[in-house]
Length: 230
Image (cartoon, rainbow, N blue to C red; front, side, top):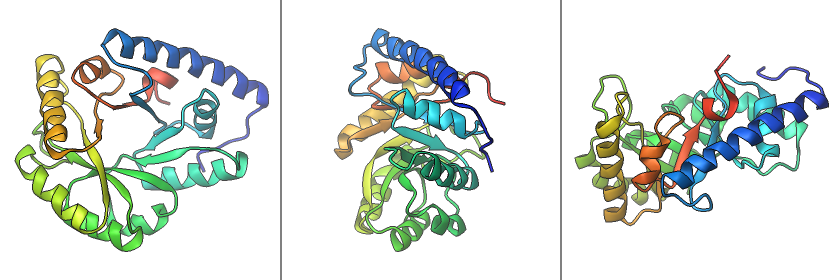
């Protein structure tokens, strides 16, 4: 289990640290031309413990993201016991394995990273009307998830045909950053507008300024909130 016993004093100190870092992130959003009321901040707790989830929630963050199904299930289950009245919306950020969807159903509020129709079919069977984002491959790096830009409209149409709620698009920019990241984010924002979708999930701890400047409505941050990963 990802949780361990921790004191209230530890949680208070951790929450103060996360709250301070959250304000720094909001400052970065504003400096990039964004509106903190319109950009959703997703706290990515991959490899961090339940105390990070609780601290982020106490700091006012509602959206929590996990990359691995087992971690999400364990942390969500533990959070339900520790904070029964929480308002967390869990985002599943990892590759969607059809054999894990049963475990995730009832816990995940938004499936990010959907890039195949077969994955959509599996989700629709187990979670009718589920909210999803289609991952756009803007990096063109072998082994990374995502569907090429040209194929996105057809996939969105087919997923909507399954009864899924396609809220928008997500992407991970090329690791080199700079103009490559700008071009990647701009292409997703343009495509989102063309498709009439609401969400553009793009930008992480190291490149959120580029993403916000190009119209991101959702950023995914871990180290910027919690510090170095354990």
